[in-house]
Length: 170
Image (cartoon, rainbow, N blue to C red; front, top):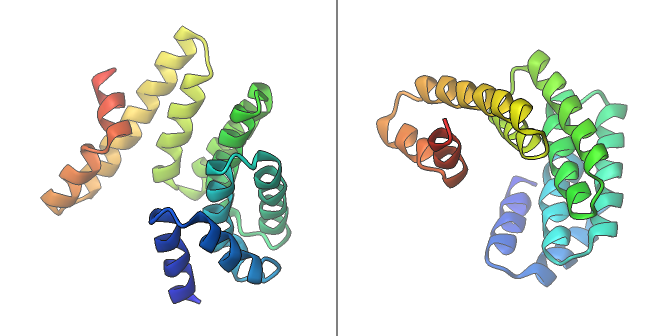
């Protein structure tokens, strides 16, 4: 299974979207792929402009995760769905999902997705609220950076384009 997921990721990164689509369709109903493979496949559908299919699969993913109480995967799934909703112009629903994702990360401690959620929520907010949210996102980034003891890894994290942009806005 792990090999298949890595292969799917490599296929998607190589731009062979049709191959990834065929690969994923073979095991679409397999629960094993729901928390791991579905997010990758959703992103592929989004890149292809197949937003309706991406939203449908995203809804299925979120429903499945809730059903089996896999809350650790919910924030990223809600974040991904928010990106789709934004593409469809459904900004209010996107904000609702992002707030829900943030609340879950407060209890689960998933800081990696928390800072991204705060940053995206800031993009959808008015100036005053956006500044506050970006400040919170920067705090999360700095906490993560402090926990990375390997200097090359810390530098790599801090040099991610979205991280650099967010820090520069501070």
